[in-house]
Image (cartoon, rainbow, N blue to C red; front, side, top):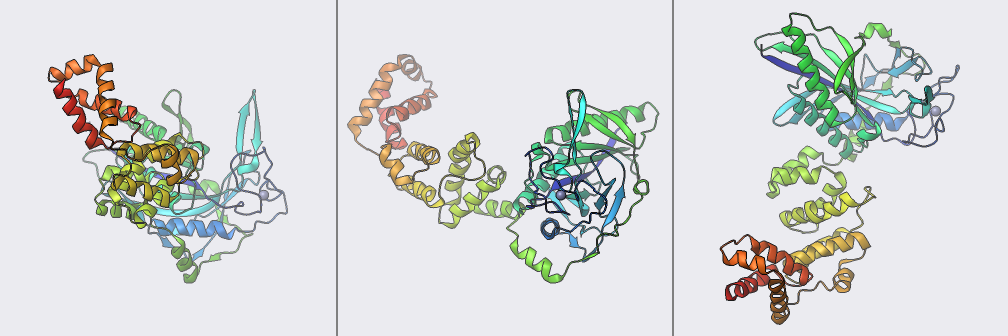
Length: 469
Ligand SMILES: [Zn+2]
């Protein structure tokens, strides 16, 4: 039988605040085990939470970025359960009046709706080592938003694309660093399947804590397959929580799925309802930068291909740099070519991924030099590489590495003659009609001339020399 896959996601994102959500402890990844804890976040009796204003502002910023409605009287609820990483035996969360409601995102032409976004505190972390388990409470009380989608996704690819769009939107809005590898973004996937002609969703299972795009896809694909086998065997899918095993690539039952009433939610008596005023929303809205979806539209208006736009948008630092270049008068396509080419090559190889060591004005000046043929296309690449590596301005780099175009024909023809003499086989190939070797010769000549000649001049001279040969 053919089935339709139905996926809804819950995305947990840690917020980029200086301190935790209900106490003054530092919110940072890593650091000494239990070095960032106090009586509040370790659940000592008699302590009281104090709400972090910034966490609420970031949750509102997230909602505004997804077009959600903001709840202006939002409440706090206790979600009660026991686990060693939750010292209070309850998590402060929002069940009845989440801070954001509705909204959504376009993914490949389909609108995926959000149900809600609520604010809550993270739990600590169990660390299993040397046959024992220890607890690190540094993460306890770190502010989280949980973004809950409607069951609108129909494939693992669509689910992964949705997570990437959500991640990118949060990073652009400064809400979260979106680092899945550090656990800043974690995904629970609710999955069910139903026969093609059915009108009701099937029974769903929930896979907890997926922390990479690869695992999101693999876990969903495995679970869809497993549920199909269960149904095809005439059995029923059991509503339960499952865990994905990264090594075997399979999902395993953890526990029967709990409902809200299992957690005995009740309003937290320690925190007052929070009133969010129109002025607060307007102020936060004014601080938001242009979201990636709008930038994408703008880039395609510049004439960039969708692929180029995506490559640039993948990293906000790169996209911001590109935008500044265009603002400074660079031709968008020319700037895009160099940004996604040599600049990204250098950036990907660099250790520091928090900033670019090149100034926009130097980069734009380098593009202009190439446009005026004062440096060659290869010279431009070389200049970007050295500016990046040495952190020097373009004028110094051009001078120190002799990148100025030198159209001395005798130098060019001498270099060409040398390259041809060194590669008799390739010359033979060319004579036999294999014109593909031209690009090989161009590369060799560019290297010999160290990028100081313009490609069109070299090509013309190269053809002349080959045809004479
Ligand atoms: Zn604390």
